[in-house]
Amino acid sequence: MGTTLTIGLVNATNGVALTLTPVTGPGTISLASGGSLGLYSVGSTGSLASTGSVQITTFDTATRKVSGTFSFDATDLATGTVTRITNGTFSNLTF
Image 1 (tube, rainbow, N blue to C red):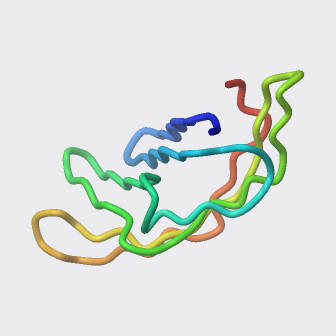
Image 2 (image 1 turned 60 degrees about the vertical axis):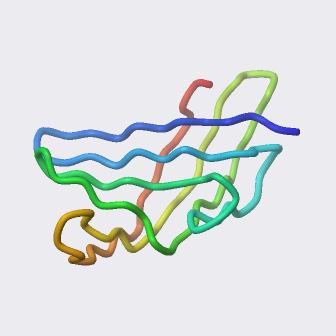
């Protein structure tokens, strides 16, 4: 058993969404299996993670804060073009 986290990181032109399950504490979660996934979008175009992982570095249930890093290869759903997402970070997000 664990927590399912959905993390959205967006700027004016693109975004990354991560759905992570189950999160039970710090550790590595694969985006290619087990119900966890990553999505990269530019405008209305979406690319789904085909490989990659999220490293949860902090998972504090007392303060309800999570931090970590991520990287993945995202395949465009329409064209098959692969975009490499590297060095992604999130810090002290409330869950």
